[in-house]
Amino acid sequence: MGLVFEAEITPGMSTSEVVTLAQIAEEAGFDRLGISDVVFWHDCFVLLALVSQKTQKLHMGPMVTNPYSRHPAVMAGIMAALQDASQGRMFLGIGVGAGLEQVGMNYSRPVRTLREALTAIKGLLAGDEVTLHGETITVDHARMVGPVQSVPISIGSRSQQVMTLAGEMADIALVGGRSLNQKIADDYKSWVADGARKAGRDPNAIEIAPRLTLCVSSDGALARQSMKRYAAHYATLIRHTDLVERDGGEWMKRVEAALARSSGWYFDHDRVDDPELDTLIDDEIVSRFAIAGTPDECIDLTKEVLALGFDGASMNLAAPRRESMYAGLRETLELSAPVLQALRSQT
Image (spheres, rainbow, N blue to C red):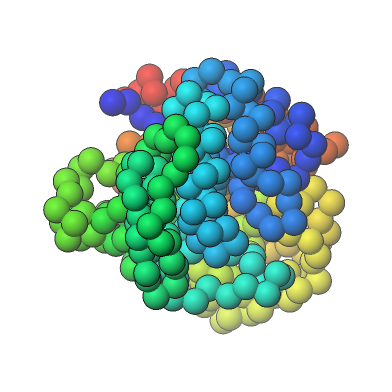
């Protein structure tokens, strides 16, 4: 099997624009498409149903949903309908969850909850009668009504425990690190392998893909500049030793202060980035946390990640700051075609 590439779209635009972007992703050569499941955004499952009717080959799923906002029985029903509508092209991207605080939800017993949810979903989609009286989830003598098909399970996380669970129960494990080196890549692979061996599975049967943020533009400088806010956020979150110690610790303090003066999510088209980020975040720092630049530059940066021992990548799409989020994402997707073609031709 050749390299496998996945794209993720966050649906902060009209439904027709999301469908068009999905069609462009298919034309560009992506194998899978994820649509972000985010509270207060357009519902990813409705969008997946629309996309399934306007694409032919693209596999698709939520990126990622969670076991808290929808009961696993509800999730199984959704996936059964989508798998039928797409003629078997769905996957279920699921994780612990994020952003649920705004609706008063917490992440109680995350690994246990995810394990119980997957047990219920997998059983229901296999057509089994499921009885599960878990610590967090209950399903009592239940069986799906209507046609059902199993779906591949994709789990993404930065947590060792969740990645071990991916080895036990998932078909695809998405490496959640925003900055990767050989040791980090090997750690993730070992966690997945530990889980697979625990469950009596072949670790080599589980696809392991790094999560990369991709911003491609005909203007490489614009792509990198568009990622400075994102890179600043992850620089303060991951806190590489050399960045923490830069200028005796003053650089990190200045970045944190500039972020505090900024507003909006780092991918929002109408966000406000403090001007000092332009001088604090250089191209080298951007390249630590994102694949950003012209197609040729993105080819080289992606090759460096694949060289860590991966057979593909899951790419969270970012938009160069054009007149709209849709216009920027369209540019990234259309210019991804030569990137994917070159990467595949060089393996």
